[in-house]
Image (cartoon, helix red, strand yellow):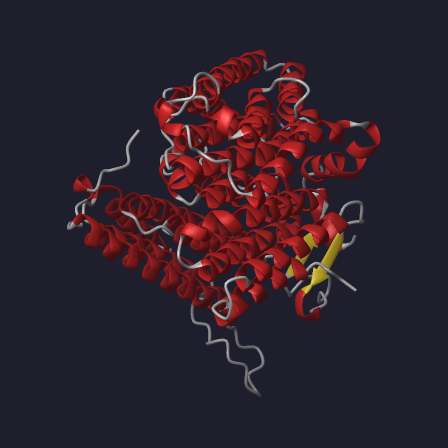
Amino acid sequence: MILLFLAIFLFLVGLYGVATKRNLIKIVIGLTIMEYATFLILALIGYRQGAAPPIVVEKMGGATFVDALPQALVLTAIVISLATTALLLSIALRIYHKYGTFDVGKIRRLKG
Amino acid sequence: MNLIPLFVAIPLAMAFVMPLFGRLSRLLPDLLGNAATLALAALSCAMINLPMMVYKVGGWEPVNGVPIGIYLVVDGLAVLMLLIINVIGFAVSVYSIEYMRKYTDKARFYTLFLLMMAGMNGVVISGDMFNLYVFLEVAAIASYALVAFGTEAEELEAAFKYQVMGTAASGFILVGIAVLYSLTGTLNMADAGKVILEQGRSQGALFAGALFLMGFGLKAAIMPFHAWLPDAHPSAPAPISAMLSGVLIKAIGIYALCRIFFNVIGLNLTTSYILMAMGALSMIAGVFLAIGQWDMKRLFAYHSISQMGYVVMAIGIGTPLAVLGGLFHLVNHATFKSLLFLNSGAVVYSTGNRDLQKMGGLNQRMPVTGATSLIASMSIAGIPPFNGFWSKLIIILAAVQAGYYGLAALAVVGSIMTLASFLKVQRYGFFGKLRPVWKKVREAPVFMCVSMVLLALLCVGMGLLLLPGVKDGLLDRAADAVTGGTDYSGLVLGK
């Protein structure tokens, strides 16, 4: 339970970073922290105290396993997050080429 | 034979073929892209009036009555959404043939466009929460790249803002799915709905609901979460603006909200009030922000927030009539808002300008664009007999019938303000004296006109969807799917 709360805290840390940081790269880092916290939450939901890894071999009858489904979900989510981060960083680099800065305060051509 | 997987398979396959063969000839990307969207539009029309269908991916049958594979479900609500996505998608791809010529890489444009279509179709037909999330990300990532497609400074800035908001929203949605999974032990939406009904709605389910409201609310740009939309939608190329405002915010925002809140968690009074408050806020604040804008596309983007407010408010009221009105308004908004963005694209194509203060008298030089934009403006402002009038009328009647007189009054105020701001668009943009600068302006090319006329005809004709015989087949079934609530589980699982 403590681990779960720590993971939620990590999620909020990432959210804080996204909301307050002025540097584009730091915003991306904040988002990545949020995503990792989400993966941790997913993995912890499948966790069972003292259970075996979900690999079924013969003569194991009666053993409890951790839930394997969230682990599969985390794998999928990691792939998605890789694509998102790559796209986000490439957009940030293109912005740097156009504006010459990573500072959000100076990148303000859109308003209203 | 079951046709449901084709909604994802066709655009996905074409999106992968496109970069391989798209460079062989200049015509090939247009041909392949339009063939794919035409096939999708025909396929979605074939879905009308079929009974509810469930497709089990990979043929995994339920074990002891518990579904273990991914389900694809096409019910009344999904048919309605598929029609919007694929018919508007077809109109937009016809429009892109000529509009996208000024951008250098058409093959990549169609690749991203078809990926977005595949993602949206997938979201709508998926009966599995995590599968819905994956398709939602496919659609969202394609749309981030499409907003940045021009790679100019403003476009990149808007895309970055949009993507940061979108990724944060996805994080909330994924945590929501995790919470719901830990409560119910299943990802199948029908099964989850059944388990929640048996357990009784716990605090955990409400927490998941709050996370979904934040996540999908951000994707749908409902008022406290709207800040990215007026930057992102106008910055994209016009056909993509039409697709984003007309379809994407509905498919991955409003549709998912309806599905989760009505069919899985079940609507209670608190969520209903929250939806109504957020809807009314978007409706009024959106229109007041819109009326001061001089950038044509930005004005339309703010109106998207306002019109989505009507839909969310109606869905929040939750009576059968209100839901019917909300869904009807959602369909109507898809047609007239995508038409308006295509009009703005035609103006930009011909004049290179989208500032209303610099336009004027364009009707004389661009009759088709002028006429279709007049039709779209009257539809969105709610002038009879155009489609927007009927849906707004139903929403207002439903609010009065449910006893929410204040909301009905706000809806009328919002409608009047919408009329005012579209009078402004028509007055400054298309009527009045032609400025000397625009003397040599030419009407947009033929395919762009064809696509605009097609959407204008839909705007005029869609009021007919309310005729008794037609209404049962499409709108009533969609509204039944929503108001049926957790009956969804029984229908999908077959008990």
